Length: 86
Image 1 (cartoon, one colour):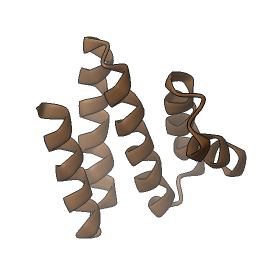
Image 2: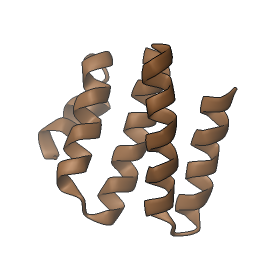
Image 3: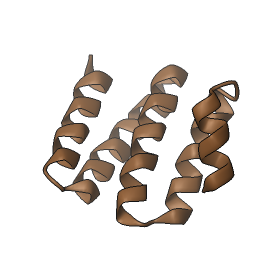
């Protein structure tokens, strides 16, 4: 599955300290997931991208990713907390 592989790749990049490259990979994959209407993957990828953006100190981007994920799964307690703090 391409989404899972991209997510794993992004996590590997982040572990190597390459958060910007990880976000770029997640952004490309998010675009594909949006086009395909894969809402579950959109939420997962957006949450991962938000964490990467937090490491870069990009607060506006963090909020954008969390809002997108929350729009898909508003019941996720982590997203409620993350949205309140970003």
